[in-house]
Image: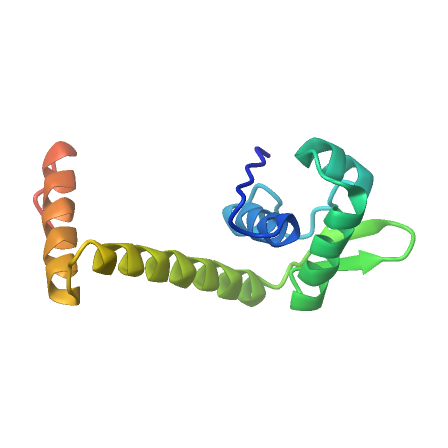
Length: 130
């Protein structure tokens, strides 16, 4: 997994978001054992305590669970994963809508642009549907 951080948010919250993306995209498949806190921290280049905080939060959210002697695992609850995926999508949409509003677009103009982009994308791929 490629880890990327920016100065806009705390590292632990960025770790949570990136691990969630890994879970919903299948990089960390359901039921899979996660690497140890130390291994994940080393891979991400962060302090193990910071990684521990992120994993504890993911456990609280139900996306990860612990087995005392075996480590942490990704949930197998598909509805929980789907809910996390939806939540991430909604967050991205809200960020996009705020950026477009900042540029001066209203909702209808944004929808028009999206429709045009979809049509152009379809033309590039040989499809004519929207």
